[in-house]
Structure formats: C-alpha cells, structure tokens
Length: 306
Image (cartoon, rainbow, N blue to C red; front, side, top):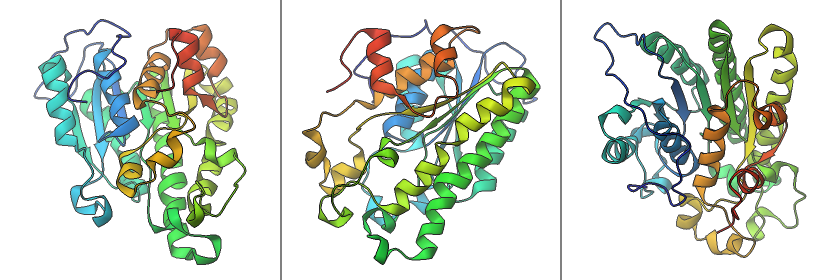
C-alpha cells in the first residue's frame, strides 16, 4: 500500500493538521483514531483511510521481538506504514507509532489512555489486531489449554479491555466510535477438520464468537448513559491475508470470491466519520455482524469482490 489503496475514492478531502505542541496536548479540532493491528492487511487499510480523512492516527502493532518465527518473512511494519502515509499525504499524516503485544491486555488497553493524555482527545478506536498461534491449525483433541487461554486473552479479553477504556474516553467527550473486526467463521458450520482443508479451529472461532456479543451489549448499556457513543462489529468477509499467502492456503479460498482489505478500510472510515444522526450509522450501530462488502456495495454501488 505504498500507493493509495486500489479503491482510491476519498471519503473526505485531506485537511492539514498542526504539529503536536511540545507540551503534549493538541487543542485543535482534529480527530484522533487509535488503530490496533495497523501493520498490514485490514488494519493498515483502516489506518490509511482514517489518515486520508483527516484523523491523527495512533497506529498500534506488535513489537518485532514478539513476531513469531513463522511470520518473520511477512510484509508490513509500523515504520513502513509511517513512511507510506507521509509519502502519500505529507507530514500532516505522520502517525504516532505504538508497539504493543495483543496478549498483554492491560498494556493494550492503556494505549487509549495514553493517546487521550497525549492529544487531548480520542474519537475513534478500531480493533483489528488478532492473535494467531499454533491453535489455528489444531483439532480440538490436539489443542493444549495453555494455547486456548492465549487465544481467549488475545482475541477476547484484550478486546474487552480496549473497549472499556475507549467507551470511558468517549463518555468524557460525549461522543466517539468503537469498531471491532469480527469473523463470519464464528457463525458458519464446519464442513471438515481444520487439518483436512477446513477453515476453522476451535481456538480461533470460539473467542471470536464470544467477542461478537461485546458490541450489542455495549449498545444496550450505553443507550441511556452515553447515547452519542457508537459501536460497530464489522465482518470484513473473506480477505486473503499475508499469513494465508505464506502458508499456501490462499488459493483454497479464492474460488469463493475474496475481498480487498480496502473495502473494510473504507467502510470503517465511513462509519467513523458519519455525522450525528447519520441513517447508515444509526442502522448499523450495535448490530452483531455488519458485513463490510454488503455495506460497500450499498454505499459506493460497486461490487466488493475481487
């Protein structure tokens, strides 16, 4: 994504943003977005589109030292994101980079607090980070409980912890948007074992199914206490990731029709920048599964499939 994403229509004209004052807190009106999992794929596309639309992006990614050996060759780092955003949009789009492990729930959640102290506000929080370990290819009988607990911590507990901090920050401002990426695989019936060409493993889909309930519950709980805080579950559809390419499983899924990560990037940015009272945002707020390709086709009138 060194160049603008393939679906290059802008949501809003890019607006110049001031440098951060030496004292630390920005006092202007420019919105701040914290994006977890911003190094590549969907998270990178979201960070790109939010930067394009005028947000100051706090890009959160895994420390290089914690990158699994199996993923060492995967493209995408926070430094590359910074370089590409500045090349595309100028210094006003230089992101703040934060390296944090999704398995550290407290440290991950604290990024929201740190961003609020640094910039004086947080307007958008997007959770696209995901933990992937050996359990992604293991049958139930093979799955060690310690590995399952890592999946639950990385893909459920951390999301809840981030949401708690995000909603608290939004309540202080009186508005804000929380978005988490959910997986349609968590509500799809398995057809074969994961090690025989199946596309789901218990370690991955169980926490994803549980975390999908977070947004509907938040929507109900916030109705009276913070009515202008919006929460969304966005299902990106079938996206071919760098990990799938590396593992050689990408071709197995391509026959069903895949979706560019930028489809989700544009949908998330559209929801995050929607004005108060926007009909689309009101309709999708609190919904358990918002299918990004369907929303993309509704809003832009273009087929989302590659």
